[in-house]
Image 1 (tube, one colour):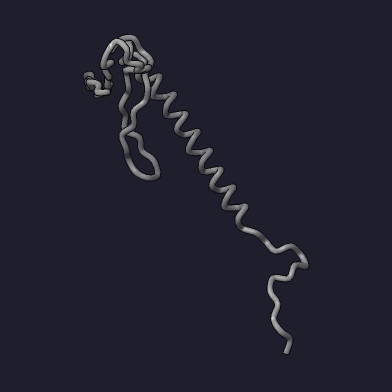
Image 2: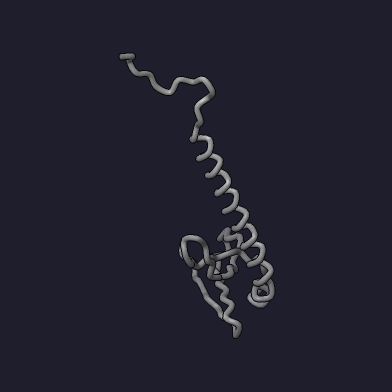
Length: 108
């Protein structure tokens, strides 16, 4: 299925993309997406987030609110992944149990 993509930018530099349904039977659930630059530990990248709206005007009105929700969710997911990675790393580091023999060598 091929769909048309339209990009719109207002005077404040806010960018919204609108995807047209290909046909009446198209099951496209969301058609408005906000576009923003996000800075992470890996650098700057362009991200897109859903804006539930019935019109382009409504999408522009909801942009800031939806960007905030998206940003908070991304921060939460990154923090969860970092915590999981730290937990996995700490579990792989094992300290010897008191009295445990780490290696044996023949006595002279």
